[in-house]
Length: 171
Image (cartoon, rainbow, N blue to C red):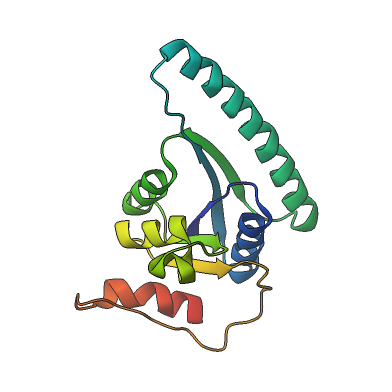
């Protein structure tokens, strides 16, 4: 069973990445954790508690809507919604490093700066901080069967641990 982590911010780009993950792993048994993280930064503890409650309630409402929409299109998709209070990049990276997930699939729409032009600030941050394989889905990209896989590596030597997830996707 493939265990997939799909971070969402409830944008069209992140919903598209969720649909992409469902379609990419449709032929295999998979469990998809749909993650939304939120964080507040405030020096006033009471204000922060009130904001946390509002943010969590709003996130739960949006998560329920997203899961319902996805289940209507893909009733067999095994979705596990998860909402946590933690900065986004560290939340995704920590879950990726936990060993509980085979892949992270996330959307990107790009941002500013040299690194972010291609991957977006959150996607770039996750890729640079996690050991989990990350599949980045550009905004408005529609799923097509894979014909090629690009494997980018840094200075670290790669092993079967690195290549195995690519072999699984290729199958």
